[in-house]
Image (cartoon, each protein chain N blue to C red):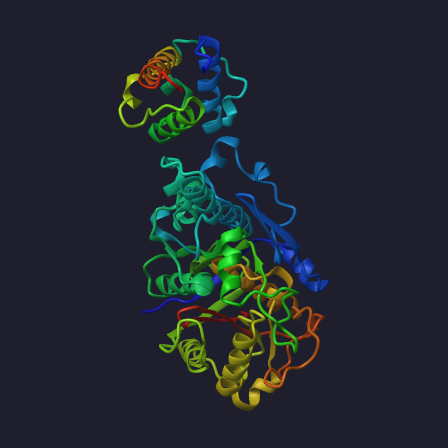
Length: 92
Length: 403
C-alpha cells in the first residue's frame, strides 16, 4: 500500500513542482505557500498536476485541478484521491 | 518601389561546434563531423553515421526553468539568433519592433519530444500526455521563442518545406524586405532530427548512408543526418548603411519552383527553373556566378540530378563554377540546412575560399564538375548561389552578391 504520510506526499508534490521549475530546487515550501507566488503560470500548474498524476497514480487534471492553490490543499487533494482509489479497489 | 536587401549578421550551431567561427574553422580544416552515432529509445537501439551538435550544453545557454519547454531545434534557433543579432550590432527591443520579421524553417519541429510522447502513449499505454507536448513539438516554437527573446512583433512564421525550409524561409524574408513590408528580418532555420524514429523512417526510404556523406563522389551511398541551425539578419540596405552595419552580401534574388513530377524522385527542370528565377530577379547573368553551395545530399539521385541541372542551366559556364556540398562536413540538417549553408556561403564570399566537399573519392560518370574535393579552394567569390531541394519536388535558390 502506498505511503500516505504528509511528508511523503509533500515530497512528491515538491518534486513535481521542481520538475516543472528546476530553479525551485532549494526553495522551501510552507504548507500555506501559494503556488501562484512561485511564478507558476496556468501551463506550469497543468504540468505540475501531470507530474503529480505520474508520481501518485491518481487523476487530477480532469476534475481536481482547481481544488488546490497551496501545498496543504494539494496534499489534501492527493490524500483524498488515494483513499478513494483504495476504497474502489480493495483487493489490489 | 523595391528596396535592396543585405545580410548584416550571421549565427550558427552545428556539428562543427557552436558559432559561425567553429563552422568556418571546421570547414577550412575539411574536418567532417560525421561519427558513428547510437540512437536508443524504448529498449531499441540503432547505430548510424550522423552529425550531432558538438560542444553544446543547453544549461550554458538557457535558464533551467526555460528548458522543459524547448526542444533542441528551438534552442539552436535561439542560440544562433543571439550570435547573429550580436554580429549585426542589434539587441532586444530595437526601435520599431513591428518592423522586423522572424521567418524560420523547420521540417520536423520537436522530434525528440514527439518520439518520447509516442513511446509513452503507445509503448507504455499511458493515455495522459504532457501539457507541454503541443507547444514543445510545434514547428513554430522556434519562431515564438526568438520573437519573445528579442521582442520582435513583426510578421512571424515558420516555413516547413522539409530540406528546403530554411532557404524558402529566407526567400520570404527577402521578399518582405524588398517589397517594403518590413525593414529587417531574423531568418534561417534549425532542426534536431537525431531521433531513432526519424532515422528508421529515412532508412526505410533507402536514402541514408551507412558509411559517410560523400556528395557528388563515386561510391556515394546516401545522406547523413545532422543537427543544428543557421540564422542571418537581413535588412534594407539604406537602413544598414545608416547605422554603419557591416555587410556580408546583398541578397539579389530568390527563385522557387516545384518539379510537379514525383514526391521523392527529383527532376532537373525544377531546380533549373528556380536557378533561372533567382538570376532573373537579381538581374544576374550566368557568367556572374562564381560559386554554388549545392544541396548535395550525397544520395545517388540528388547529386546526379543537381549536377545535370547546373550543367543545363549554366551551359559552358558550369565548368568555371566551383560547386561544393558542406553537408559532407556538418551532415544534412533538413529544415536547418539552408541556414547553416548560407552562413558557410557568406563566409566563403568573405574570405575568398570555397569550402570543400569532403569524403570525395573521385568523379562519378554524371557528376563531373569542380566540387572543391576534400580541400578548401581559394577563389574570389563575388556572386554565389545557395540551393536547396526538398521531397515533394520543392526547390529554393538564393542569389548573393558581395558589395
